[in-house]
Image 1 (cartoon, rainbow, N blue to C red):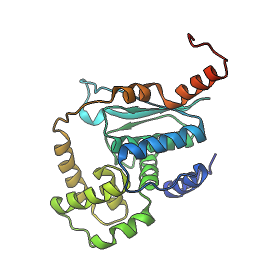
Image 2 (image 1 turned 90 degrees about the horizontal axis):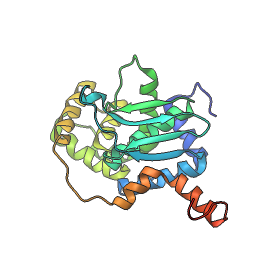
Image 3 (image 1 turned 135 degrees about the horizontal axis):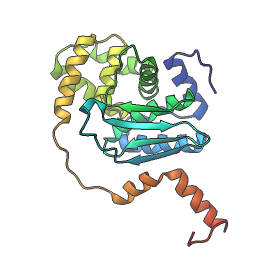
Image 4 (image 1 turned 120 degrees about the vertical axis):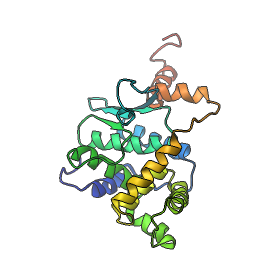
Length: 237
């Protein structure tokens, strides 16, 4: 439990101290995701799984689900396994914020949310601050100041910074917006530029062992394994 009147940034800082998580930099996004999953599962005893959350053809693309969370006696978070690990990272901590505020939630493709939905906006800012702390970002962005508005420059800048923190370029551009380095119009134009690039089909081989492990969840697998070793269940069970 944390005070309910904390700002998203303050909650992110207190939560990092609570779980004892270091700021992971200059690592592959999938490695950062796996490490944070492990820390959250062990510290909070929550279920984190991935599943193919397919788009609904009856709704617009913006209504597709990135992730969702369920707050209960044993809470759980479901990530979209089709997303890039850098996107899953943002979705993961967005949903963590919902759980910390003792509620369930859904994370869509929209990182920025209108002021009318303050809860979603709060969770977005929490996730952004946790993954890319403003104070740390200030030191990393110093060589690039002042930030220019053209897409080619922003593409290079966000690529460099995204590589440092393991997040997506859109998260970095969101941080630049929050910190006042770019204007809302510049952010919207660059976001559109990123979405156009994202539409290109991605191909590659899948590690099915990892896929199935993610679908079951590390917490459940470890509990079952532990019970088997203690002979609390049989191998057949």
